[in-house]
Image (tube, rainbow, N blue to C red; front, side):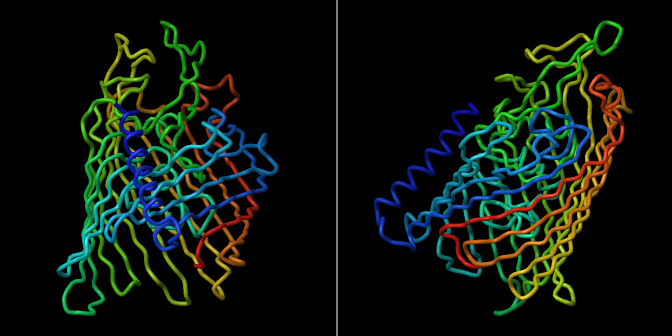
Length: 439
């Protein structure tokens, strides 16, 4: 089911892409290709290793990755099939975790000409929910920093619905009123394992986006003997976009904005997954959250961006990798919470400096053991970006994560894992764009 959904989403958008190109392959306003190559020099320091290599750390890179890295190579196509119908396909190449070329988004977009103040839009396919106030650039990237906040890192890792989304935008009050309202809602399939990586590895901060066909590594699962002692570790992985229980999930939200200076968003997401469902080597994780987002213009040309997410995930402790339950299997609940505030300033139209603070937490609220599943920490990110032209840009970023997990020392003592870890990463990045428009 999951593979059928993915193939259908990609095939629909690709067919639309081809149809648009055949309809008028010489029209630049009808068909548009954009490409980006990101190359970075990375220096990382983590006692836990990189999670992309199956380590326990929260960074994408570790000491073994020091040097030149091809951070991301991606292309985006947007084609207009008719006046109100368009298609979008975004594909990229990644060299870590589940490497190779794959698709991150593929969807069709219908925007009928409004006959009233209500402007409606319908998307169908595979896409990101409109829950990020940070990742608003080409290819669902951040124009502020190179590494995303903990919230948006996780959204990029495990939240990618395949379904349909409706939205409505309306100006409130009189003509020219600064008040605007937007509502959106979606029903989707996929995302049933969402929460798996968040639990086993914990929160993370990086810029790697999961593609529709990715299988991601996770820290190895502890193997216990009959006394409860850890006698080994089994490798494990997750396919976060899988459909397992054939029950649709949903999300919905409401946004209010004022004069393009203030925006507030309230949203709720629920994958409605059955924790006892198993298919294709994956278990369902019943994950839901509420979110509050804020964006505001401040004095001295400062911009403020903030998000707060609070939710929980239900899963079966004692579930085996072969889809069976041990005699001690029981449903458990883990609550998670994350928030960030970012100040950013654009200087002379080309230089941007951004400072972000993240705080995150996960802890068990139902089931045992309660004390070994916590994930508590915070992070600082400081970034400078220079937009030399529409084609070339570059910058540098410093990121530090301080966090603690009880199960690091308990389950992974043989790995030399501490209970508390400070991880840092410095990245010097150069970006080449082809077909992109000036900002």
